[in-house]
Length: 200
Image (cartoon, rainbow, N blue to C red; front, side):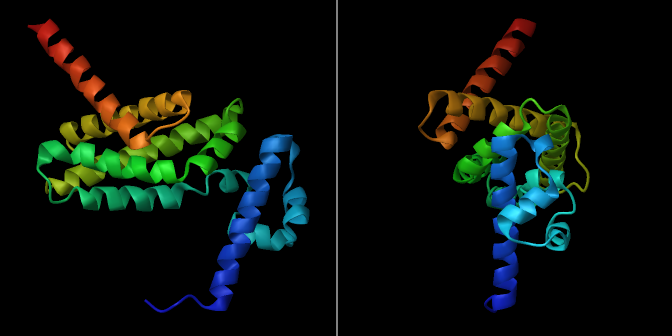
């Protein structure tokens, strides 16, 4: 792959600077109290530049979606050559490692989103999109073009495991998110085993 041109590099750097500036302003002043003009003044860019990169203030908050989708794709690729029963743990482990690498930005975005109904609703939509992409990816690994009930259930359980693991990891204030994810998977298996035994 050829190296990025100086122009491309500066464009990416400018986008990153706008994003970082906007998120910090949203965190300190509150999302609704910050205008695009405020962000542009702080970042040293023209409003046209902001709109070229993001379009709206909300798009800055959710600019992580592409990186998350790419990371999920890599996690699914990593699970392509393992037995079917081991795929979900591999995918979750790979994705958990990515999330851990993003912990500072995730914490910053959480501070912005929590308590803001519209942003919370958008967050739930993004989570549903990730769950849907996981279901499609798991079905594809089994040779199906559309998710079957098993893939849908696995994807739903997978997102639940990640949410619980993230909560536990943050509460503990340290350690590894991968370890927290593995521990949560064990607990899920215990719960499911209890349900099965209870049904007998």
